[in-house]
Image 1 (cartoon, one colour):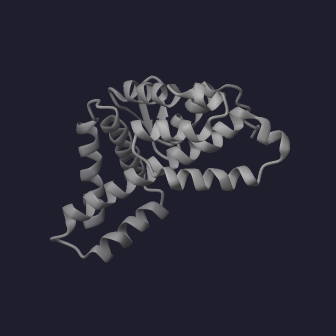
Image 2 (cartoon, rainbow, N blue to C red):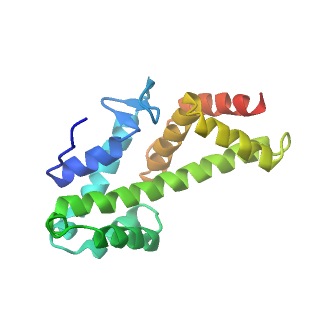
Length: 195
């Protein structure tokens, strides 16, 4: 497998937003890229997210990295402190030529932002599953079943996580969520947990 070389901020944003989630024109994929499902409107959501991430790129390009992070955090909610701390740790480990590469630094920062957004979305999804099943199962049992689905790389659970991320993005951007297909996979996962 070759090394991915990224040259522009736009390439960085595209690569990280699509990674393990989206394929053009409107495909959601599972984390391992074994199943692709068409999801109407997903292209609009990703395009708007891409635009938002690049909307303040002039700050990044003029070495105002913290201002960029704060500006983006005003538009989409994430833990700025956590992103900044994790980003600084990554920067400290870089070689000098890597430190000078603004696109590479952007990749490190944006990967932290996206990781935060995905983590928050997944936690919200797990909470929704627990809420749906709380009358039928104990939280500990639900957690165990979800861990099994995750460890087994269950396709339905993987797709549900990605559909949840897409809906989180839609919510942040005031766009219509991908409700029908999300509900379909939510119900599949509920059935898997109950079985």
